Structure formats: structure tokens, C-alpha cells
Image (cartoon, rainbow, N blue to C red):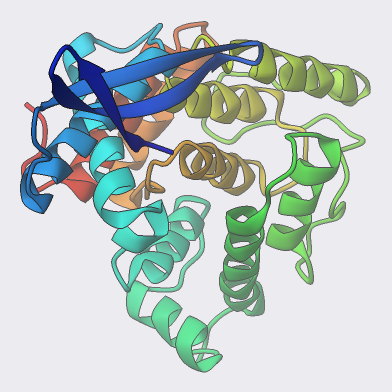
Length: 303
């Protein structure tokens, strides 16, 4: 939490905006912004708060795959949310959950329209002629979203299995809430997921890598890493993409960034970035993710 510090130098008092920032689990750093000999007015002080939040983000995070200008734009977004909105949830449009649910399900082949998705969410009405699983997937998506939004504990097997369970419960998915027990193929992709017997070890390795890289990567890069590695491992019989997108947003929310919608209209670009990640290049997806965030939460999209 930031605070005003008053210091005396000679005959005069001077004011500073100060914040103690944890750089690593064992190291903290005090950040200061000089305010002058008199406290600024409220509107001017808000500008200093924004500047301090930007300095906080710069001190805490590093970027491995992203260009500097893109990092600065995303960090500006994070700082403005922290100062003016307090939490990312306060910047979400009222129809966010409808649009998120529609798009994340449509990417996987759900046939409900945006309007039909809204009716299912608001009125619990199954549109005439709709498939039962399509309707259930909408209701499940809402439950899964509410779960990840409130989850405060660590990334682990129980967490990701619970997310997959919320997504697939009451559907025809053969295994709900547990890792797959058979080989799977990804439609339209050359990538062959690992055999089921190595999935548990690969996920444990991913959990360790996530916390190791947490102090080295920008939050959007950390979200990228988790999403892409999970899709690559493909640990479930169904719901892998939807689970990965929810966990990606969980990382963003934990790092004071708003959640992102991967729109079905960007499906080809999204899949191409995943294919690049499968080949070892995480940068295209990280850039794709940042651009989606900026397009959805800023007035002008990035160049």
C-alpha cells in the first residue's frame, strides 16, 4: 500500500509518495516519488499514484518475449486499473460473461449464437432446437468462471482438475475432473500430445516451472506459458482449450490485469500462435494476448 511520507531537510519539510514493493520472496524495495514542499491537490496526486504504480510494475516484472513498447502499454493498463478501479472486475463491461462464454465455447464448436447464450445465462432458457450439451456448456462456463475468479490458492492438480470438472460436468465427456487415461489427437493440428502415463509428471513439472518463472516473466508472459503448456500437454479427454483459457485469465486477474476474450473471429490467429508455441516459440502468443487486452480495454488499439 502506498502512503505519504514527510521528511525534514534543514528548515523545510518535503513530501514523498512511498510504496514498499516485494521484489523477491526475500527482498523488498522502497519506491519514492517526490511531491514537493506542499501536498498536491487530489487530481494532481492521482497522477503521482499512477506513476508510482507503473514504477511498481517495472520493479516487479521483467519481459522475456515481449517488445518494450507493448509491455509499457499493458503496464499502463494495469496501473490505471489499480489506481482508478482498484480491481480488474470493476472495468469489465456488463456483457463480459456473455461474450466470454459465447466465444470460448464457439471456438470449440458450440452452436449457440451470442443472443442464445445470453438467454441461457440470464433466463436459464434452452433455445428451441438447441443441443442439450450446448446449453449445459454455457451454464458450466459460468460456474467455471465464478470458480476461478474467487480461487486464491496455488496452481496445482486439484485446481486445474476442478476447473475442467466445472466445464465438463453433466456432459458426455468421459472423464470429468481427472487426467485422461488414453491417447488423444487434436483436430486440425500436427501436434501429438504426450502419452497419458507421462501426463501427471509433465503437469507437476509445469507447476514448478510456473512458480520458478513467476519472478522472471511479465504477467502476460506467465499467462502465456501456462496456457500454452497446458494445451500442449492436453491433460484431459475434453475441455482442454476452455480450461487453458480460464487459467490464463486467472493469472491475469491475480496480477491486476483484466481478463481477455479470445474471440472466435480470431480463431485462426489464436491457433497459429499455439502452433508456434508447440514448436518452442512463445513470443507470438504473448504478443497476440497483449494485443487482445489492449484492443478490448483501451480506446485506441496498438499499432
